[in-house]
Image (cartoon, rainbow, N blue to C red; front, side, top):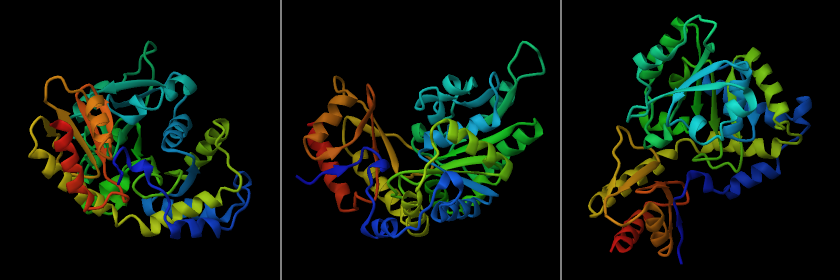
Length: 344
């Protein structure tokens, strides 16, 4: 059976050319700063983002956590969306390991945070309150349909943060998807951010890893936080080489994933019993609401699995499909047919 795996863009496997780059990577002890390939990845990442320095970490979750630990103390508060990955899907690490209080406000349907609500959430100087230190947003915003946040919005949020003396962190797990979908240089999306992290192991196709970027003083603190979390790696150049290959070769092809997601949305829109959720700009994530009575997300995912299409259940009446480079344009009509059969 031909399997079309749309569970996530994290399922991608390194290409033959990426494997060659990994095998031939020059390595050293990264904890001592001696791995030249890691150093090259960090410098390349910082340059792409317009920041002073970078830090290679094992995952996006680790990247977000070291970023928060490096900028907030115990008892400090972070403002973030109630649909943010950092809040929903990272096991409460900021509180559990950092003693940092998450102050959630609602994500708008397009993934943004209402600027008035952000300002209203900032604590005053009162001994009864925690100190507000940081605002964080996710771009693209996964749970809001993978919608990208625009440069104009990021400039407004950055201006608000600066005016109120706060720092701004961007969970840019799929920041390159946002840049490609909006047709802008990725630097424009993070110009107002003090810190950010982005993933190499999603649509870019590397097997593991994320990079944290910011100024040199922040990266020095983030490196300490990475160490205490057990994230100090030794001959990590084998992994960093995959990240370099991904950044140099796989960014432009993200547009193919976006086109395939749009084609899938168009095909599924014609089927009764389900409704693809609209977004302002389509990237690689497609959420589908189930309108048929008696059919759950888990049941629909199981029905599709029997037909060779793998998706994830995201709630009682919601499923998610994520396009990736293993799923081709020719696969999209097959996915629509599988949905039609699974709904019959």
